[in-house]
Length: 305
Image 1: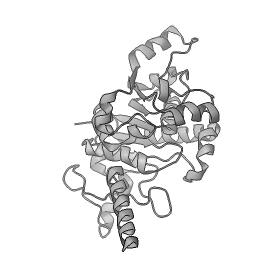
Image 2: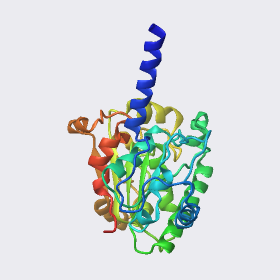
Image 3: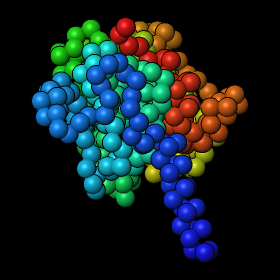
Image 4: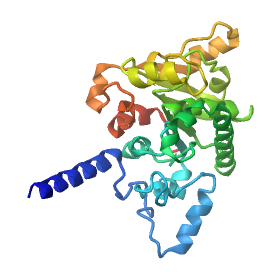
């Protein structure tokens, strides 16, 4: 009897975790004609693949990280792609409950554009330290993501594009912006608990956006973004307290034009107690909670009507 109760409790806990992370397969309210994809409709499936050809991967199968979440393809449906594109960049753990929760928070907020959880890691979470430290590899991945953005913009000109990155993924968002061609911009980037140096020169990244960069940071994130990055370093290879803990500072050697970009296109949002109501307690994972994303992050993202 005790074993049965224990098993029951474990199953219930897993179910609750999946619900909180947004991995249950519920139909999306994104407009007529796009409920859960039906396997018998090969023509529709082929059309979806063609329309989301700009995406890196719209389907996960076991044992790939994220295999448990069956909504990736729905989030990239053609009707969504017509109205904008939000790329969620995971932390150094790769695709996980945390970044899927970010995507689910955007969907919960009725963000109508395409949403992709774009894994830039090797896909093997035990290699998280390598993902943090492999700067040249990460720059290559950033260039590949920048190419995705260009492909989307070529296919859907004029639609808004947003980057939402968490931890190492927030640092990657900056590298992606730096990798965009000079004649390309996205709409905005949102950084959550960014594992990047506070004095990283954001001039190029800011210049590749129309609305700028929003940085959510919290001094409560001591284990990861203070002790962790002092010891192991940030994605841009500085052993320092991260910008996700204390915010960005303007480097001393930035030009007057660069300072103007910092003043007009960088918005910094420190942790505040009212965020507890959105289930963000100020730690490293708090900003990935789907309710916090729905109430604090999604309203900042532009989309086409």
